[in-house]
Length: 111
Length: 118
Image (cartoon, rainbow over all chains, first blue to last red; front, side):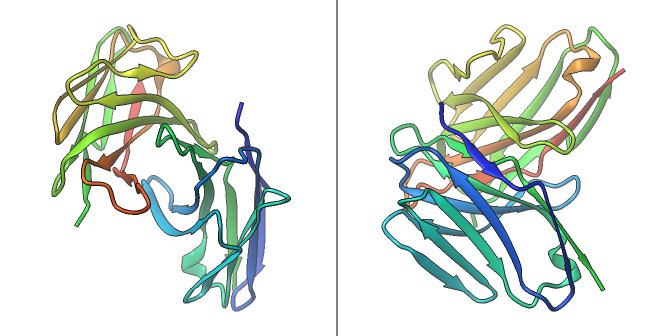
């Protein structure tokens, strides 16, 4: 079945850049999403990328997509303590609208 | 716009009781809603797809008699955990897919319901 993998944990200093990586297996994906989840809360959509793009920038966020390697990354520039959360990538199945979520990466930002 | 609410946000119940969780799309209609379950420090697991006016489609391994889903209107889906047991304790999140699709078919997520079964 489809699988989406992420590294589990990332720790960065405030002001540095964070890069969160994601790999997926479904080659028919149309959109790939990045969500943020703060403790005890639902999911907040951060950004997305269409599968025929290789890069998308949105303020401090940069998404890179390597479709050949099925690798997706999220770069957060000038990381702040408020960015501490769990980040999920998700792969949208084109026929069923289902989202397959990655394992989640816990980002910890320290002063 | 595109707000999804869940009620209750937190529920504690005794083992053997049934618990109903509501998912509402507040400012849009949603033919399709999804129910997810999230264990502590783990990812979201899709439980079922809720379709307005028809039976829900359950993912493999999810007991449909245990997790009853009703999607009686275009703005409301309910998940009932029947005869709840401690192993059903989890964070349940719903999402709603607008009936009028945008380019990205974006799902909008509710804030989640924390269920604790004693």
